[in-house]
Length: 346
Image 1 (cartoon, one colour):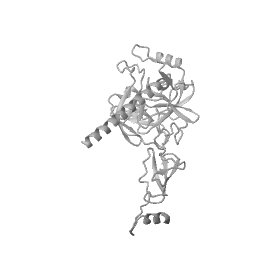
Image 2: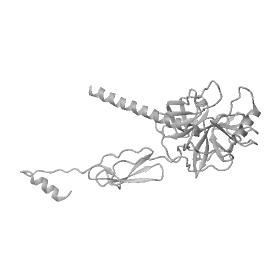
Image 3: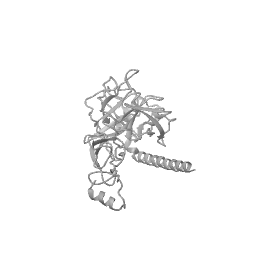
Image 4: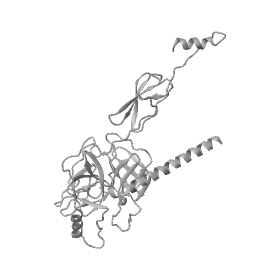
């Protein structure tokens, strides 16, 4: 410490006494969601110590312990950074024409937003936020647990689209959102899928990918994540194909809330057990959630296509549901804090 400071401190006293000075410390740095803190230099968080906040992506910011006892960045700001997760950019891009029916494993890291629903049925889901999973409404019934490739997630609440009617089995509005209790930690192996805008295009013939843990052979489920590359099918072509297969009153009808993907010769398709999983399209190297596996006839058979929920039709509902639930959760948390303070004061 500067000698002038010590002299001034001593001169105000009428007698000599030991003067003890303690160093300025900043305390433990705040933890970072989706990241971590690394001490670069110094010790015990004292003045001049240097640390780095690292997101779970190749990114970092330096923070130094300042004289006012706060950790500050190079712009003299004390707020810790926010790690905004990258969406739709896997570390390994899927290639080729893998088949779910017939079987080809997805490369590790190629579908980091994939979720496996195991209870009570086997189905799929899509990570779209640090607390949110998107899936098909018909898959949800009674679900208690979700399991992605690395961790189990406890469900806080489930939201089926208000216009979905399970009793009619027409699969219209086949979409649901699952709010999980604990935040999903993102890294290179777990990543959200981008949501589309309401104006995102489904171009006939454009190839997309569908992934899942469903049937790969007749009555045989896969233990590995698999994928298929299948093109978007013209709406009228798909409608006629459905009518040709089964034109009874019990047959679901193709609505504007759905679209189809597949090849007329068959061979590549989603199947039973893949429901709720993603159909993805890409734009400028970034994948977005174009569809949710919903229904179809057979699996990869000639003249039959997979039918998917058209996600672009539900962006307003998705955003509204998430916003309202997060506001409700925050209000309950504030209420709990106030109640805890009241109980402790009593």
